[in-house]
Length: 451
Image (cartoon, rainbow, N blue to C red; front, top):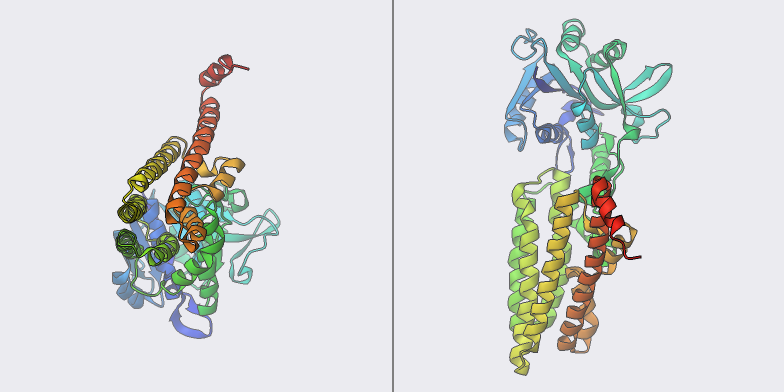
């Protein structure tokens, strides 16, 4: 049995008959390309787009799609109704409602369900943006709203396509699925909202887009959902507005997240040169700008669904750039004062900063969760702890009085204290996690308590 993906694509833009709604842009890419990238993310190889009115347009556009399934077919339902080439008995089909920005978690919950047919529905009385454009359904006497993702067996799909080639194909398919005794419901109100990579609860995204205005609102929602939660105080309160502004005006340009990462890295090493040659104020201002750019590439990748393995290397580049700043500043201060003390402080700062990063990465690899987000106290430490943003924003008062040497000393001490706090919380959280996974470990900790 194979699972394939299927999208119907026949709706027109409101007030613009003849223009396919599937090609409206939300978050910098068309609605249909976004859904194709979501399908690719699931690992599905074969996807079929069914259209009566726009097969030629969609066939032409598919050559411009990126990061979509390798096997992508556009089938004209007016002329090709044999279904023999793609609809095989025993297959099942993941079906997405067209022209809706639908959350990855909804699609994944339907796809991973072991049986078919499966329908994703909103809970009763759910308040949802764009409710008027959704497909209403009634199950057990209760009005529900289709959450734009379903999985159906080939026999059910074949039955609908052979009888109902109308504008209500999706509705007819859902009605038959509801009447099927095998049907399973997924109430999306029960899906978890917490996303580990964003370190916060992110409300489920579901927005139909019937015209450019509604697609623009969907873009706003995508940008808001891309925001990370647990951050230092500059990243949490100062940077988001500037990041969102840059992301919004970059969406419809050729700019990619990897381009932003490379640009940030080049600018970062130039800042090291400025520190080393004594241009301290321009360098300090540059570090604050880098803090904003560092959030842009990640947000851009999440909004446009352009995350890549290369992008994961950004964190290594960030650390190399950051550490080079400390040594660049130490080089200038040491040369200007004929004193090796700045080198000692910079080395101390880098070593403890690196140790804290390694410790956090170990915890993430072991538990699947960020140490910064492991509990309320860890979140508070993250807000004020010594990280790149907090360190260089904290440098400003020292810079105003020309006390760069003292500033470096204080920042090194700040980093050591942050590491020690992190080490304490690391041990507490590892103990709790290990104890929860193994009764033997929990017993060992209890048996060896001192008090």
